[in-house]
Length: 192
Ligand SMILES: C[S@@+](CC[C@H](N)C(=O)[O-])C[C@H]1O[C@@H](n2cnc3c(N)ncnc32)[C@H](O)[C@@H]1O
Image 1 (cartoon, rainbow, N blue to C red):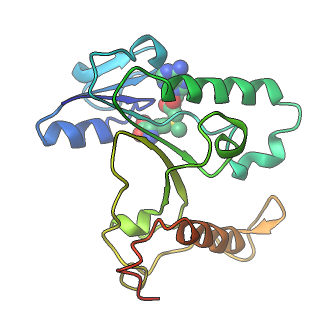
Image 2 (image 1 turned 120 degrees about the horizontal axis):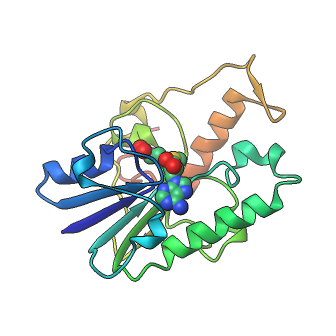
């Protein structure tokens, strides 16, 4: 398949596809940190067209995520621009699209609406807790590989650390609650 990974300079997702035999390319305003032979440097919107079978997009979340909510005031123009960018990626003329972002205003203020799925790194073999929203088009939901009990998720931060008036542990618990209530975890494998 021809895969475009938009807003990626690390080459990590692109190379995972390439290792599986796909013709995958990354695209970012920045140079690639990895092999630049399969990297398109520039505005992703200039590259999204019908030549691709799959689009995976990681648009910047700085003006969108709830973690940055206390900075929203006075930055409405930046937020509107970030939303418009995500909406343009989502409207790409590509049959299969996965757009990823943390929990934030894309769900409430954009035409994307609620995410298709909210997943956690710990469900896929990584220890961290970070609710990650996926908007999926033409693609199946991700099926978690690890149960809650087996994964032993790690909450990043401590009760002493404060952010936006809430402790890091509080945010962690909230993020776990959101991913579980979204049905992101496979109910069959939940052993809590
Ligand atoms: C949250 S980072 C994602 C990084 C990605 N996960 C990786 O592994 O490289 C968002 C990226 O979007 C890129 N970006 C911002 N606006 C863009 C645009 N119009 N076209 C392409 N990339 C853009 C930024 O340069 C940044 O690298």
